[in-house]
Image (cartoon, rainbow, N blue to C red; front, side):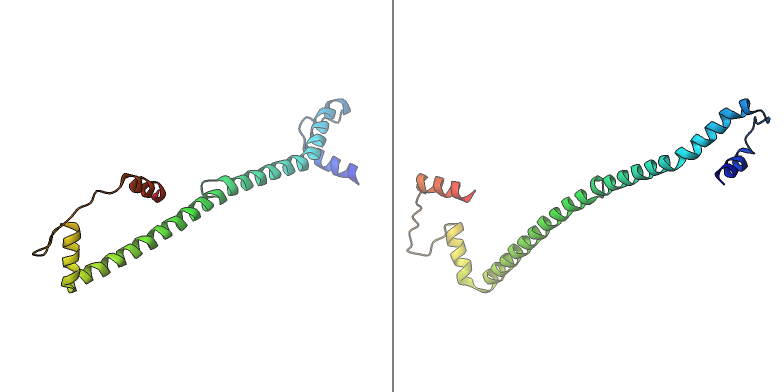
Amino acid sequence: MQGNKTQSVNRGVKGETGDQGSSLIPRRALDWTLRAWRPAGTAVAVGLALLLTWHVVNGKHGLSGWQQQRTQDKQLQQEIKDLQDDNARLHTRIERLKSDPDAMGILAREKLHYAKPNEVIVTLQPDPKTQTQAGSTGK
C-alpha cells in the first residue's frame, strides 16, 4: 500500500525517464521531504508557541507591564485620596475662618504676630536639640 502512495506521488516528478538510476535522486529527495515535513512543522509550531508565550509575559503590554501599571494605579489612587482628604480639611478650615471671627483672630495672632491691646508678644527660639530630633524623626 505504501509503495502505491510513493508511486502515485512520484509520477508528477520531472526528470523521470523510466530509468531507475536517473529517478533515484528525485525520489530520495521526495521521500526525505515527506518524512521531514511533520517534524519540521512541529518544531516551527513549538517555536512560535514559545515566542508567543514570551511576548505575553515580557511584551510591552504583557503581564509584567500590566503588573507595573497596576502598582502605579494603586499609588496614584492613594495619592488622589490623600489630596482629597487634604482638600476637604482645607475647605473646612476656610469655612471656619469665614464664619468665626475668633478663629480669624487666632490665626492672625499666630501667623502675623498681631496682638490685642495691652498684650505683649514673646517669640521664643526653638531649642536646637529639639528641632534636630523632630527633624530626624519626621523624615
